[in-house]
Amino acid sequence: MSQGTPEPAAAAQHGTGHGRELPGRELAGALRAEAAERAAALTARGTTPHLAVVTATADESSAWYVRSIARSAEKAGLACTIADLGPEAPVARVHERLTELSADPTVHGIILQTPLPAGARLEGLASAIDPVKDVDGANPLSLGRLAAGLPAFAPATAEAVVALLDHYKIDPAGRHAVVVGRSTVVGKPVAHLLLDRNATVTVCHSRTVGLASTARTGDILVAAAGRPGLITPGHVRPGAVVIDVGTNPTPDGGLVGDVDPAVATTAAALTPVPGGVGPVTTALLLQHTVRAALTL
Ligand code: NAP
Image 1 (spheres, protein in one colour):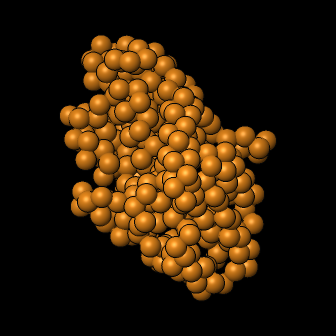
Image 2: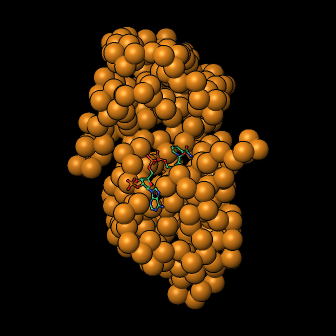
């Protein structure tokens, strides 16, 4: 196995968890470089891939995330437009802006940033994003196509989970993957992507009874609940691979995942927060935008 990461089932069998870290920066760098190369080739042919981010919130961490996407896009040679409609924007205005961008032939990828204005539902608004430009898989049609095994953009975070497993040569086929969280943004699409890769998948949520005992049956455990420290060593099968999707702000301005750091003593491998799923997510958004520009 590359990078010395143990096969989850084998490690579980022998109880040899040693908590190897699975950082995402190297993979993210490679994905960004590939996106930059393709963007340069497209630009040379007269089309610069163009990502638009629609935001309507005063949330500081969201604003930071949007700026970091724009910086990454521009560094990779993509154009990036931030359509900041402000926290008071009526839902109808957000819908209208998404419709305009969907019709704009110079725009190839569209992201609708959360949190949304009060009263808005992501699924409703995201329906206004043309599926061919839906680079973060927010339109319910994208999730439906994903579930049906048809080509579609997966939400970048969900795809980042599988991309990290691939990068570290951890094959989900035949493994039991437990996903904690069932949102349309992370949990459900991760479950579909893992099923597609022939894992046996269990999805847990806030009404799951006996979360720890179910989670402990996973060779691969994906934590996407948005609850800091939810996953403790008691939730983790010795030797399992743990992917921590959670990004929970701390009062001191830091970021922690859903997984208690003590899990490193039980798991064979664990993604860090920050520096795990996050950077891969951003890089995949660039890749998706370049792919959309190639097909439009
Ligand atoms: P979400 O919409 O709030 O969904 C959270 C899910 O976790 C729900 O399905 C919920 O169950 C479940 N859950 C909550 N508490 C639980 C508990 N105690 N036990 C079991 N399940 C529980 O959140 P999200 O948008 O999916 O995001 C999840 C996390 O990923 C957040 O920390 C978010 O910041 C992070 N995230 C990271 C990235 C990245 O790029 N790294 C991108 C997106 C999101 P119910 O359905 O029953 O309510």
